[in-house]
Image 1: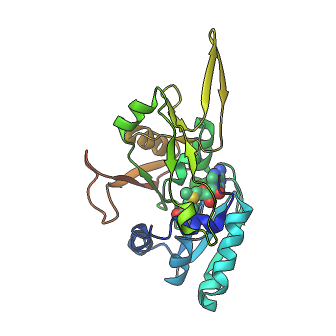
Image 2: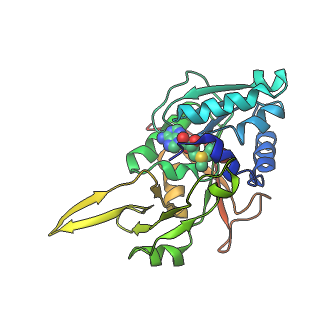
Image 3: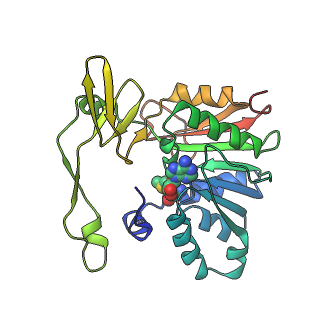
Length: 258
Ligand SMILES: C[S@@+](CC[C@H](N)C(=O)[O-])C[C@H]1O[C@@H](n2cnc3c(N)ncnc32)[C@H](O)[C@@H]1O
């Protein structure tokens, strides 16, 4: 899915609205030590390190981390010193250190597909925080109209972007046909075939879990957090029915699983 980290940065070069939010969150929650889960190429982690926070970034993909390292080379020494990278799975990791704030930005929590993975990530975050530490997640609020359409699958749509950005051109644009599976809140470009009651799934690696607000709240509660705030945008605005984002701030109130 993230096979070309360079293109990831090109495609997302205009996505900057959330950067001040995370810097302000770290300041607000007095988080000297920050852990970003699914940090990718450092789009959020590098600005945090630049702002003087001590940041650890964890990502599954070696290529995304390598791209982050390449970008770090052009940063000042202080920034380089402030950022440590780890390869690992956010649903099951142990860094043997504590942070004041752990976060998952930019919809990356959608990569936790199964309930087991979701709970694993929340419990790992909990274990890496002291009592009172914050676990913050920023994820989109799904468009129910589109999901309803996609419940039956909708026709292949063009994927924009790459051919415009990549140096030398990227060849033909891609097409994807998306489908939403209500049974397990899964949205992806894969097909599902049924044979009697037996369900065969062809899962592409482009799938994402679709989150609903109450599910998120329950995950926090189940895994040792009280939900302290829910914001609806990157200006710390109230979460309402028309909010574009849901940004949950969980405060650790007990050890996970205890
Ligand atoms: C949308 S990118 C976000 C990267 C970065 N946080 C940003 O805001 O640009 C999602 C990232 O999640 C990573 N990822 C997916 N599943 C993961 C997992 N189970 N554990 C850790 N990282 C994961 C991918 O490798 C990718 O770098």
